[in-house]
Length: 270
Ligand SMILES: [Zn+2]
Image (cartoon, rainbow, N blue to C red; front, side, top):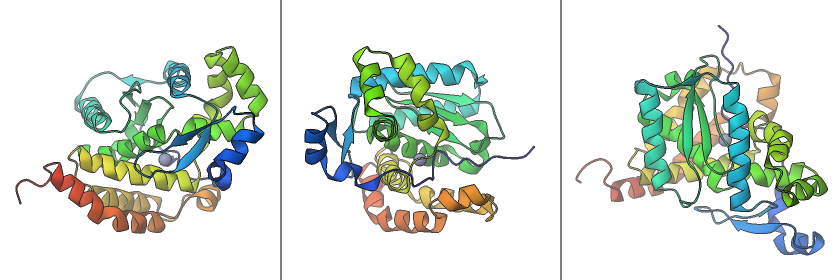
């Protein structure tokens, strides 16, 4: 069976980078329709038309739509690992108000995972062999939790869908309609490079806080790179942040992550 390496929402630099950099001017221009959000861990300011409560409702709707078409793994050691990693990581994340939930989806052809706004996550069985262990899973899932707390999904919808459409659906509380309009942006289209790096950074800190050895993040991405073998196809290559750059960035953040990990009791007694 051919394996599709979608690589959890990584890629496409279509996102307008300066979006979050002129909060005040944009807020005035939009009549305060958008609100500024400060990203945990990185401190970046971003604009979002959605509230956290909207994120949760939208995520619930979109998740129901995804799961309705998925073959969910309901028991077994892999599911247990995924659920345990979610419990440990979400406990140390910076927002406890989200509705964290993860499901393992039985599809070995997908080397993929994604998270929806508000904390709903899917991990595909195809990524298990690359993750290799619960710590490897924590790399993937910490990254996805990073997307959630940074609110990348609705940040992206805020800039990608027409503001009029968004606001009219938000005003009438049509989360089902929002999920239908936004699912493509939330699941099928990869995030931009800046968001991927941000999710990496947050994920690295969270896995360390949760007691997972952060050095595994570097090892995991090196395995992903080996899996690609440079043959990811033109679309993948044109939009994907290079693994090398990603690994270099992670290595640069590693000393800080290691001290967080040791403070959390990682590695046993010094
Ligand atoms: Zn990602």
